[in-house]
Length: 200
Image (cartoon, rainbow, N blue to C red; front, side, top):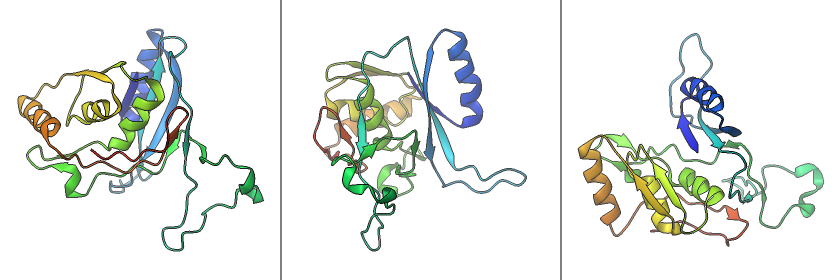
């Protein structure tokens, strides 16, 4: 189970899941610097993604991310203590702090009729490929813009979702019917698949 929310709300929700006997696996911080500073508080710059399981997870795949490079000169941002040659050729192991997620501000990632941003496909790409196998069922009780369904369709997972707003449901159907989905580039390498860029 993955729970994506503001840290303020994920603290009591996580406590509730632990009380119900779920096993805490990870608190993933997803950097989102698209908010404004708040007087008297630290600048809020991340969302929380909690990962809980019922006992040991059935599936958990190792993910590697490419080495970070400077967008101006193309050189590595870190020198890895002079040991770059000893790193895995597919990159470094995925950390629990994700700084490479788009804040989804560009209009091509928005559904104007809904008046809200669409969740980055890169978040759901990682969630789905880390914790499921092809053919597994993924349930999203808050389907929102339908990003979970889009990613599941692409990676061969079955999915089921619900949405309380009829207007949003119509937009999800429209999005699934579209010949082109605006997806965020993902250069992750999962242990049982080659490097894939999500293009639908």
